[in-house]
Image (cartoon, rainbow, N blue to C red; front, side):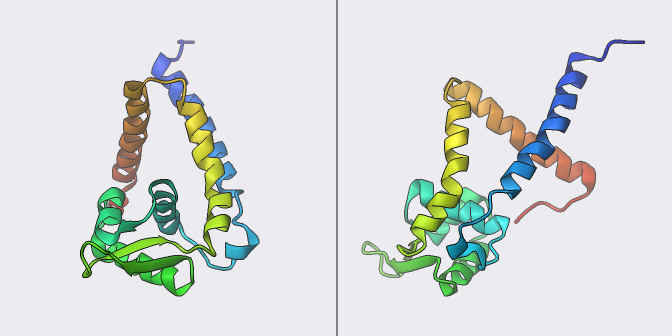
Length: 156
């Protein structure tokens, strides 16, 4: 019997690890205050950016999320109607709106999403910046390859 290639061993480890990671993330139930809002993954990415980076414009959010501004506008409108986000006029350019997590929702959003950010910080802390970039680039390459090989359309 032949010995598996080192890459095969790594693939095996990752195939066993990924379902555990996904399962653990799915078990992170939102706090009761926001549980009824039916938040989807697209909401979580936007909320994470606002939690980590603070208030931003729709254009800034769209650029960071890699989606069209109209997509972000729809998400922002949806979450604003639900009271999760607030919008205010940009003092530097009154035509633009600044989006942020509403003060009433911030504690629940933070309670829900902060453990994931803290876990990533702890896991990445011992790595150098170039090593961290390799981790992110590898996950992005995996996502792209998975989408291509499974015939999924690109996300937007």
